[in-house]
Picture 1 (cartoon, rainbow, N blue to C red):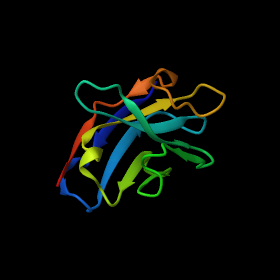
Picture 2 (picture 1 turned 120 degrees about the vertical axis):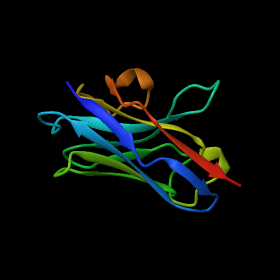
Picture 3 (picture 1 turned 180 degrees about the vertical axis):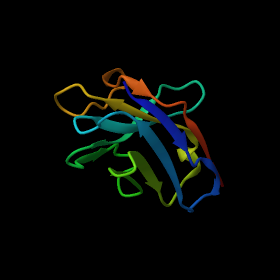
Length: 125
């Protein structure tokens, strides 16, 4: 069982940076993969980035490659998403997700078992 709590969302100007965090409450995360998704009204929740907790192997959606960086702090059980060069189209609710299922790191929403409540990121033009 994992509980996830996002924080750090807010309003930022286009071109600026923002970092969102996700604190995970779990006995151990060593076999987990964790990810960030985002969703805007009327659209499907889309994959942003993922990381393996133990090895730190990352993967990104093409639309954010080079601008957004996923990382984790094992000591703090916290997942981060550093967002640079933000664009108005990055405006969304950002969710963190986790799964302990074996196999390739999922990029689909259905691949994750645990979700946070989301944090709003708004990028003004």
